[in-house]
Length: 114
Length: 114
Image (tube, rainbow over all chains, first blue to last red):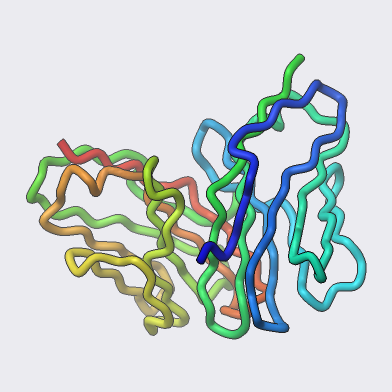
């Protein structure tokens, strides 16, 4: 079974608007971390934001915030005030427990329109 | 710049050959991870080392091997190369190997097998 699901292969958003990228996960562990990475066309993987399973507050990093709904097992990334430079692939990832591997979702390609 | 370095940036070689990819983690990071990203398989975890010891194995072929040296740099060896091994190979590092440790990725090595 897929551990990380990203149901939106591609998304479009108008510049300066907000966009939500979906991520659902599957785990039976109590301790886990959820991560979002950005991969622009140049290929590098850029760490954006982290949410721990015990964190009560939603994580925020500048224009990025994570809408964490533990009961629904979802960890959606919200990008506010989209910029042209936000056009990229976005990957949701999870790490469970101790010494477990990172598991990445298939990614969502975001295109920001001028 | 994540602080993780990878060499070479590009590599073109023929089927049947052997190559070595090199990674230097961020200063202070003890864990190194190797990933393969191809168009059809997405981002696949290959192997993890922590302070010189192998800690986790993912979808790594028997033709592939890796090691982490005392200075914590790591090498990924790919042998008997096939066309299907053409991919972007990432190295990532994290401070420890806890579930809440974010991984920082290097720029990747793009391998083309002809």
